[in-house]
Image 1 (cartoon, rainbow, N blue to C red):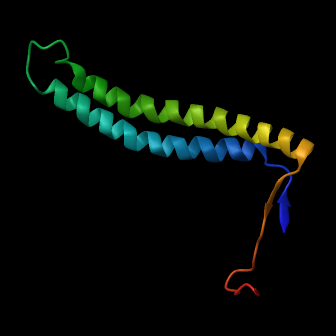
Image 2 (cartoon, rainbow, N blue to C red; image 1 turned 90 degrees about the horizontal axis):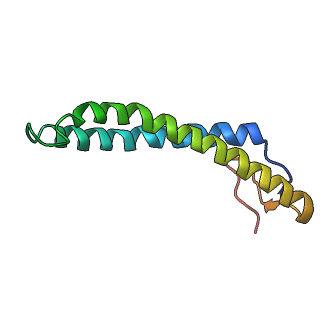
Length: 103
């Protein structure tokens, strides 16, 4: 068994930030389509100019998700490091690639 004693805070923050940023792209596309559809329903509606809001969502949501992911990743790694120092880290079993475990 191997034990994960520490997680790099910067490394975890980058991975979480990029992962949630990519997720934000997909969510931003959904919002952009929804707001563009609402904007195309007709003139005179209060949300008739929401096509531009849809494009803004395509830009804002991935950035927001990326920043939130970065912060949450850093906090999560820092908390894990604190807990692992006090109580011990996660135990994991590793094997070499393409090898069958000997059980």
